[in-house]
Image (spheres, rainbow, N blue to C red):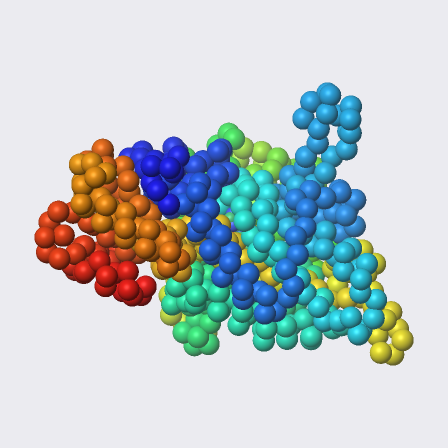
Length: 577
Ligand code: ATP
Ligand code: MG
């Protein structure tokens, strides 16, 4: 590939409004272009990398399923079968963009965020007997999600690339076996081959409300990753922050003298940070109280210390229900007498159970909502203003610093990026679609499903985050946009350095070695060498009068910086050198 023919250019400017390393480097090196927030175009060099990553994924997935390709849009009716048209919060829809288009067809469609709702009816069409199962298929496709604030470059896109595989089984046992014994090892091979094996760990995560099986996340440790993972040294396992069993570190002085309770007016102040600043108290002395309605018609409250979030799955387990949702504005008003944002655990109707998280335990003079619009109670104390709870629970999302209950020590916590997620879906989709098979006993039974995602564009971003230095990107050999980057240092194309470099380039092309050739001899040498570092191809070869004088060309390994002069023949003769 001749650099002069590449329409992209490197630039000193980083991606606008982006603070992430991957967006910055990939933009400056001309690999991606931000089309809008969370939506990137993959330019020739970037697309080569993405395709190579996807090829590794494809080769491994071919060992466990068949590749297919599904549409990017689907009928809303499919999503209604499982209620996901309403429950998937990131779902986009598309419809005619103008009157003329709407006149042609005024339907709306779902822009697929994932493909369970598309693949289930396809398999339903072909699978009818236990003899057809198990089976699995995958695709590599663009996905669309209405992500709130995509700020992490290609780590989180509103449009992004994903490999998604789906498997179909006669029983949950068979699906769980497939997940652990077949899909998991295939994922491990992918991350090993992408050079991420050492940094990628398996973390247990929420399985969702339709199965008791936790989901399995592949998390790559990475400073800019959006997830926190917790290492349990006792079981040698990682958990994600949603399901990690944890205890909050104690906060406050248990011997502090009790101050008189006060109700303070703080109009419109509901956020924890804002409230703590307004009351001039530590955030940890505030209390977040949320009111929930459960699927079995109960209504209860959950409290956590300021700075923590309630984990709804843990809360469900504690309350003994299958699902919960935040109480409606009207219900909150009816029960607390106040607008949303001012609920507190004191003075609620007797039948409203309050689940206290352990993070609220042992505090003196704490704050909580006063159950009056705009009012907050301060200097609340257990035993005096509210009965000391008989039991404190773990109903929170884990935070850095939390204690592992099985060791009594703080967890080792690290940032990571979720590169893959393996799910047991139970019969959620087959029941929604009425997808059954005839079992050996002649009975009709629902099919068990699993889905297995792997974010190929996120993986590219993670590699850029991990593998770079102050000069630019450092691509592993098997996914680099090219293996060699040749820079002739010459004044004209007739100079020996140029003609020798061209010979080398042509020779390499003949051997099938992918090569970038910097034929832009009018640029400054420094800038061209800096470009080579920024683009990050594994080997840079400089051909100059000086190197020719020394008997060859200068080969520099991008990852180690090691330089050596090698004869042209030697460079050409050995692909691996
Ligand atoms: P996250 O928790 O990061 O939002 P998710 O759990 O919603 O991701 P899944 O539905 O499990 O995502 O998707 C499978 C994989 O697709 C993820 O493991 C991740 O690698 C990738 N992925 C998900 N959302 C995005 C996104 N917005 N941009 C890029 N990759 C994504
Ligand atoms: Mg996930």
